[in-house]
Amino acid sequence: MSERYPHLQPDVRLLVDRSRQERIAFVQSDQWIGYPAATAAMDRLESILHHARARRMENCLLIGDSNNGKSTILETFAARHGDPVRLREPDGLTGHRPLSVVLIEMPKEANEALFWEAILERLRCAPPRRSENLMRYTCAILDQLAVRMLMIDELHNITRLPPRAQRDRLLLLKSLSNRLRLPIVAAGTRDAEAALKTDEQTANRFEPFVLPRWRLNQEFRSFVASYERLLPLPEPSNLADKEPLTALFNVSEGTVGRVVRVIQRATETAIEAGKPRVDLALLEAASRLPYGGERRRVAG
Image (cartoon, rainbow, N blue to C red; front, side, top):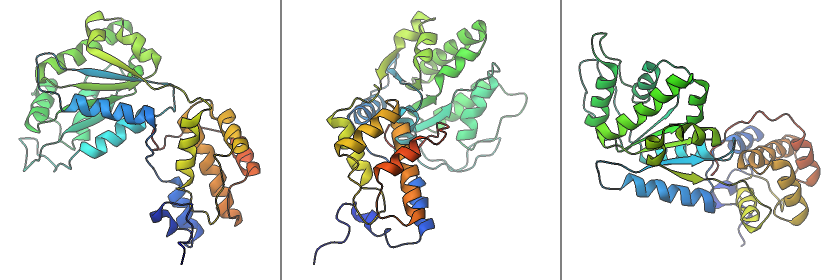
């Protein structure tokens, strides 16, 4: 007897006969689909993570347009390497385990304390006593937890700071990497790259890794075909065929986030309407809905 719903991944086949609410919840959930640029970025981060400690550590800046997968790559990598950590008391650590990777978002405000507090919050660590130096305290925690990489999303937020505060934040990153021999991986738009270049020494420490926009080619077709295998619909939608694929590309603005959101919305509508698949009309209707740039954990 042939397998039901052979157009879907095995674990997704089990969802097709479940309730509409369950199917829609799955469609809206974070997924990971590796495509060449995302896989190459992950490989680069693995190489940096396992690099021997040195006086001058390798750093990396993931560069890409908004909604083109930078955050997804950082989040997925951190999830793979971030061991759970226990709550800590102000006077020390309580039964901690090594934590390989810490991921934070660069604060938009000039107050340097917010940077250190973001790290402590990610570690679920109580803040220090008022008399203690926040930077020294945070560095001690990172060292004791044997953190091997700091990841900073939205690095371009520093461009909102006054020029002096921008320079101070860049010097902070260089000092932190030197002090702990800790590699830093940041992600941002071209604005982040421009900000780094205002300090030559800091810029030289961050190797750029560019995430390109999509082109209408076989890579794009493969990504769409792979994503369709995650849609809990009883019939294949054939989104990788020429007409729907071209329609998706035309509304995608070349970014993975836009592609995914249009497919998700069209699939949600199909499920709600009891339709067995996504057709071109559903794609076109989904593409006309307002797009707020939601982030989804789909590679890129």
